[in-house]
Length: 125
Image (cartoon, rainbow, N blue to C red; front, side, top):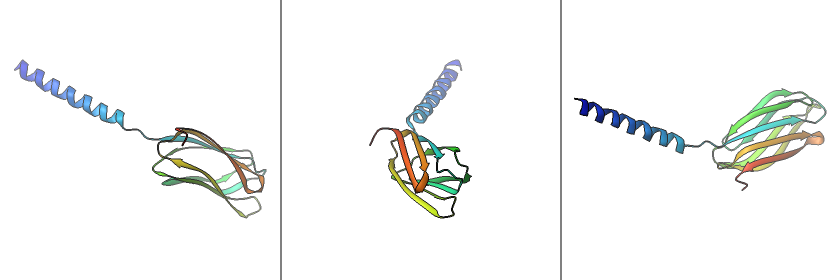
């Protein structure tokens, strides 16, 4: 019976190693995103749309920084929208993002409905 037990253990080890190999082969592409409000006033209803999803905040005080980790699925443009301190809506088009990219993205909201995008992404498509 010991040979049968040894075969059973070897089979279980093979299954576990196969499962680990499959798990290691799967990779999710993440981008650490930072939104900085340098508009000089608080903003409301911040929304950042990216391929296949979005994130946001009800409000972001002047000078505040908001961090969010996004997971890319597919590719497409990044868009930022919010309501400025004077109550008017702002919409800004950002860079195009694609699923194999990962790294960091800094979004700096500036006065007058402007923004700067500082991507540190690999691969650089």
